[in-house]
Amino acid sequence: MGYRSDIEIAQACKMEPIREIAKKIHIGADDIENYGNYKAKIGLSLLNEKESPQGRLILVTAIT
Image (cartoon, rainbow, N blue to C red; front, top):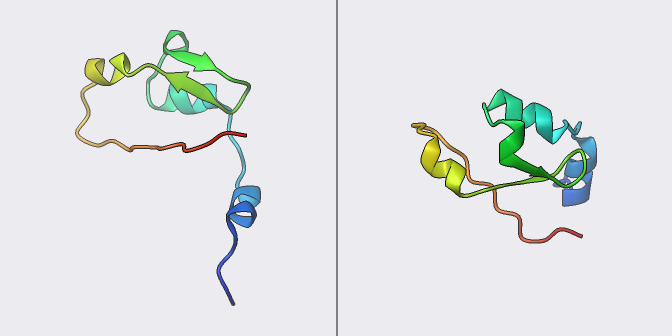
């Protein structure tokens, strides 16, 4: 069995509304700029306000 393609992996995932994800990580609705139900921008200033020993970096190289 070979590796799955990027599109196969993406299509197998269940998308969750960005508001629900933000709520889980304690980011208020005022701190996000929605781009539909599943995408949002979050200001870099929020990083300085939140202190957390763990974090994740998500890099988006292109949106089409």
